Structures are given as structure tokens and as C-alpha cells.
Image (cartoon, rainbow, N blue to C red):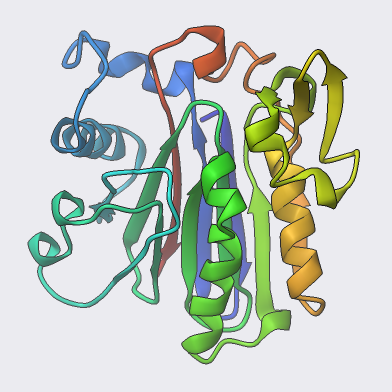
Length: 246
């Protein structure tokens, strides 16, 4: 797998990462073209999970992603009642074991969030729209509403298109200019360079001063041959996941 991290904690092991081109290549026989709707993406993801994860296989949860700030909690009960087919949104969180939470990206930012003290894992798909709405900050708030403390929450930012290659216009840039030149700066002729991952970091640090930790891989999907990039005119999507392996 292109990015695969395991962490041992007091309540067990958590695992998160990103599957890119090589990890997903074997699915071409069953899926000659990339899925075009949430139902087929769910099927695609379930096949990949069966290939890459040992028994007992985790329950798979995905979303009908809409580039917004809606979040959904995976609760106990039959998997069918938690189906992404009824869920429009861009973030998932749970306190349950053996539940793999998945979002798809092709330039946008995958954000993994977990507690180092008690069972809690979450994942966010954050493009410029979701970032301007503070979707990652909203996820941290959800965690704290469940009783988790700010300092026990750890956040990691996965592969995404870096600022040097992400050009936007002023209508987008104006949301991020107050965060400083490192996040967003003018390129000239009405164009700006935006680093959404750094914008997420700045937003979280600005609101949550006691956050346990933030790491940014700084992996550029536009430059790397390992990952799909929409701006590189690729149709595929990277599969980003997190789960608590009980």
C-alpha cells in the first residue's frame, strides 16, 4: 500500500493510510472503468478491502461525497442501517472496532483523526470548499462533544496536491489569504497558489491550541507517480481509510 501506518495504543491498534495506483491496479479486471456513482464506489471499495485486509474483515463505510462539511457517525447496528447510500457528506467518525471508514480523493486532502486515550477514529475528505467551511475543525468539535479531550486528539494529513501545483482564482483565494503567504499567495494575472493542507493545519492550530499533534506527509499527488490526481487529468481516485483494529 502506498501509505499504510499502524499505531499501538492502550485500547488496541489503529491503522490508516492511502491506497493509490499500484494498490488498486488489481481491481481493473472487475472494474474496467472507474466507478461513477456511490453504489459502485462502495462495491469497488469492498472488493479492495477483501484483497488487502485479513480476517475478520472490517465493515466498510463510505459516503456520497459532496465537497461540503457534513459529518456522519457510524453507530452500532446492522451495516445496512449505516449505508453511505443515504449519507451525503465528507466525513465519518466512530467509536466502534473493526469499522473501516473510507473517503476518496484525487487532489483534495484526506485527514485522519484519532484519540490516543480511548476508542475514536475519524476521516475527512477536505477540498477547498470543505476547508473554507472548517470541516476538520467540525470533526474535532464532534469528538469533543463525545467527551474526548483536545490534547488526546491527533491529526494526520495524507497525500494531496501541494500549493506549488494548485492554482486557483480570486473567488477561492479570498477564503485563505488571511492565513498567510505560505498557505495562499498571488501568482499574477488574477491567479493564486493555494496549499489546502497547510490551510487545514492553520485552521486547526488557530482554534485548538492544545491539540495532541498534527502531522502533514507533504506528499504531492500531482508530482508523485503513486497517486491519482484530477489536475493531472486522471480519472482514478485514491482510497483513504482509517479503522480501529480491536
